[in-house]
Image (tube, rainbow, N blue to C red; front, side, top):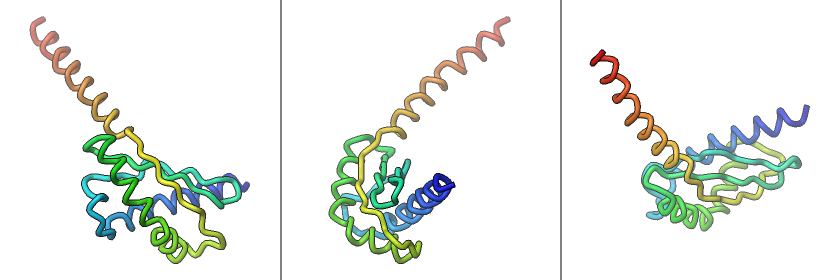
Length: 122
């Protein structure tokens, strides 16, 4: 039963951190940033936040540095907005899943037109 609660808390934290990131004025936190996933420990004392950028992994790494410097503010805001008994300690990690996803979509896009032109020639 507790697993459901952790899943709900991680989704709530993900939503709130994404909203807080839009409010931050740090120049390192810019571009198309996305919170990909939030892993909350079973006792809800730690949360690992995976951040990805459309521009690539280097932009995500720069954003993680900015988010790490604002961890105290972000943690306080998450605690206020979610009314958690214990607000988890946040650790930000750069992730390249959006970049990989765009690469896969591009490869699929290159394959699909070839199949359409083959069927038109028959």
